[in-house]
Image (cartoon, rainbow, N blue to C red):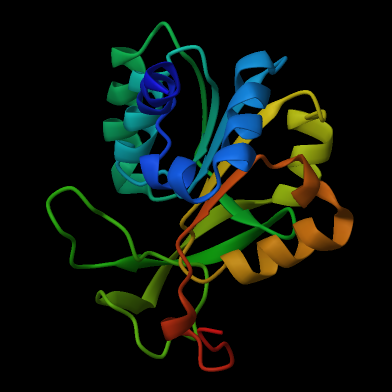
Length: 204
């Protein structure tokens, strides 16, 4: 048991997961340790704090991050330089369901270590931060489902962690992953949902 708990700490998995579903958890941990590739994809990397926590636990991760917010480029570039031993690919693109140029609405009020709430969507009804909907910037967006198939090209032998915080766009993006079947390559899915910002979506 002591060995398993030590592995839990190193693998950045909550102990409560082990206590609730020990067999399922240990199978997942075994898959991670035996994986051909350990992949971490961060959609909406923001200031890179979540990325940093993952690679400090496992510097051998193959990391791919997406963050279109122009103000964060310098901060993310500096973080990548600090972790030269880890493979980190940074794309200044928005995650979406098509390859196209889109309006991106920037937040105007941020917390010290959190610069989120900028969004592709212009129909937020209860945004938690102030967003300037009158002066959008144009950003390049990618078809994330196609990127997984053609660029990432994962296999069932990989351990694929997907973290997603894309301010309401997650519903369309995840729906396409489910429809294509690419959702089945994902070993761990970490999503911040924004149901409160879209009138047509309930918490349920």
